[in-house]
Amino acid sequence: MYRRGSIRCNERGARGAIREVDRVSGARKDLLGVEEVSGYLGVGPVTVYRWCREGRLPCLKVGKSWRIRREALEDFLRQGERPATLTGQLRSFLAMPDNVLGVAQNQELLHRLDAAFLSVGEARGGLLVKFAGGEQIPEAELRADLESKGLEVGRLEEEGRLRFVQDRDSPDGRVEALREFVTEVDGAGRTIWATFNWTEQVDLDTALRRQEALTELVEERQLVVKTAVLERVIDEWSSATLRRAQVAHSGVIWLSESGLVLSRVRPLPPA
Image (tube, rainbow, N blue to C red; front, side, top):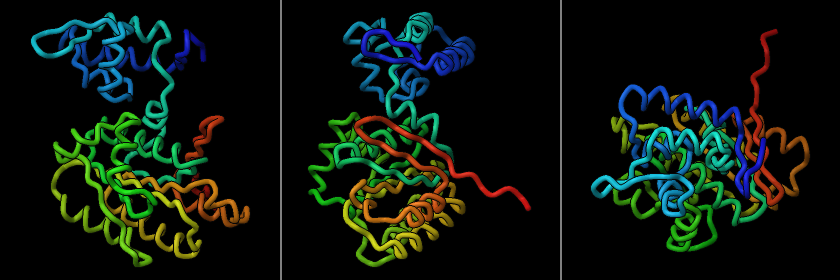
């Protein structure tokens, strides 16, 4: 890792992005669209537009659209100006299908994790669903908070790419709601990216039973699901309880003010 100003870059990741830009754009054109650049870098189009406006990423206007020269993007990456964003790191971590557990230090970081997770799903062409029943704030406030963290909620809803769904009160309500959503959009040809949050204490046996059902659904329908909890929710769990929750998922995301930890749960080797 090295640093230029306040922006950090993973040199290996930059080289990989440059190779990808070379492979795709070299075969087609030297002028790249904002959507292409955002897909390569794992950030939202709004971030690319901001870099263009600020002059950090040289670009030009063609009609009503911004275009970035391939050489300019390569220079941008080589100079170490690709930010080590949460979205970029999750983009490298998340797989399809996937079923991950997130732990956030506070609600601000919980929603930042939501926005980053859904941004990765958007970049990969997914259908996005945010289950809002586990939140203790009004849905309108939740929308505004996610928008402030870089997720273009209004546009995605207008395009039919993002849906807010209320969880049900029954123990298996989340699984039932997700299954119904999957059935409703079946045939759309896109992977579904779903995010759930726990902001209050939850019975562990109920949570693990729900997680087993989610795991089956993920594997059956090729979904990407994130279930996140606030740190205070798990404060009273024993070490053994926490391990049970971790191994019920394929990966774990820990997000705190001090940093990010990503880990994968590996299956047992054959006897």
